[in-house]
Length: 300
Image 1: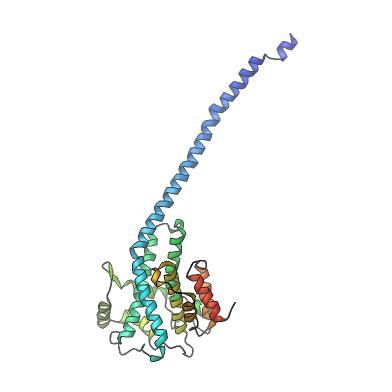
Image 2 (image 1 turned 45 degrees about the vertical axis):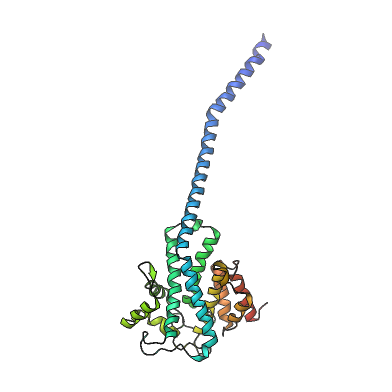
């Protein structure tokens, strides 16, 4: 009898085990299934959100990318022309901005058109979660920001005797972008003719950009604006090489030729630091910029 009470029959032990397993399955499996479904659903929503945001950003960029490439190409060509003809002293104010010659007026116009295009693209990103953007689109936005920053950052002259509190050889960002924004109205850029007409009516808003260009020369005591134009050209060339049409791409030797126009090696070093700051150092085009700057500065 003692053995019978202390050793339950095998059938009873099996039944108890089965009951225990049933209880575990009944209570734990639904919890596991719920947790799995919840994670799966959250992951699905994250993927859908990321896809929709990436699609929306790409569509918004596409609205103005063509405008950026056209205005960028026009300014790049003008800068190349200026470097060849710098000694001809074509950048001279004659009275008011509207009375200035074609070369100066069209130069100011091309600068503001490019910046207006950059601003249009920059503002589109405000309405989309660009944090989850595809890498190529995020780099494109960073390139737009660099194309503005190369005009506005006083840090480009770090190591030189330049007072960043005065905008002699750079622009205050808000002032520059405000000027650029005025060129885009009713869904299109002002033409040069319309821009000239506006200057003749009131040129107050645009005097800063005209003053920056007025009389710019390669060798100017205590002035660094020529080197800023070199930096602008290098960034613009890199942008078009990376994001532009095939015919807008240029080889390394043309980057190097522009970099050698720079009068102060510090500017090239600071420009390279800006490229790294905007996370563009691994991008095609910007790699050429970095190599050209190194070659022009005599660095390995």
